Length: 330
Image 1 (cartoon, rainbow, N blue to C red):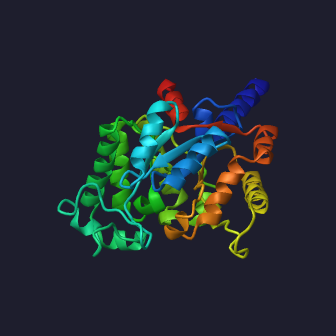
Image 2 (cartoon, rainbow, N blue to C red):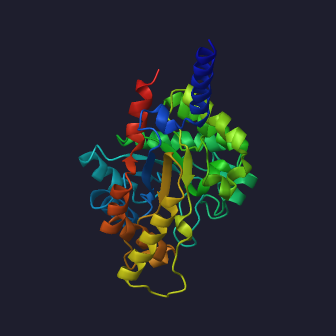
Image 3 (cartoon, rainbow, N blue to C red):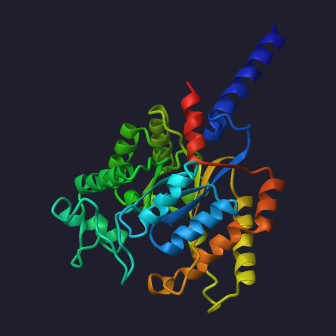
């Protein structure tokens, strides 16, 4: 009898321990304890250079996913490519700021519909702080829906939605509208609702781990896949101390940075954010971020990074696959 109770106790202990430590990767049917990564390219459609970089990162490298800035000028160029490559994992990079000095865009909703989302140049505000100060949650939702509408009008059904410059994380009511549209439309939304080991170091949106996990459970209950963590640090890897680093040095630097950071990732589904760009002579007139963006592209196509991922049994995935797996979970 004592042996029976001991066995039952141990079984219950392991069951509850497993339940508490279960990741969303586990829930989605990936191998227990696996590091599962979405290698995600932001800012597609922003420029010709952004399109070429994102496409090359996926076709020739280890990038698996990307998202599109619907108010920007080079969206048609990418969507035309997408129609010929329908299996590309492409979502909406919901854009509520216009950050550059000489190259700017306005809201798709139009100024009369969202007057507080527009600055004195007729474009969206340049910073997250300015948007959060002026724009109402109603205006944010209108613009989210307008960007989704343009995508669908063009025949582009997004695999997911995320947030350019993290603007949707700046206010709780913005987040609520983001979740509202995603759950209503059954479109996965980028949100780390698991252990959040890496992203919580960044103190994103002032979210506590408890609140983030509660939101994760809500999104999961609504039938959407949920991230365990978010890797959002690569934009700061710049080599700015070197005026014009050569491609070999830039690639080595960025690849090593990714490898070092991947060692710190815990098991679960992590979205790794990057900005792969193939800068032409025009890009320097848009942004001074050419080095870090070019470095992201060079890292993605580096055989050294691919070998590290394979040797360490890291599983690469897409938002499309996550949604397909979530649909199969009761």
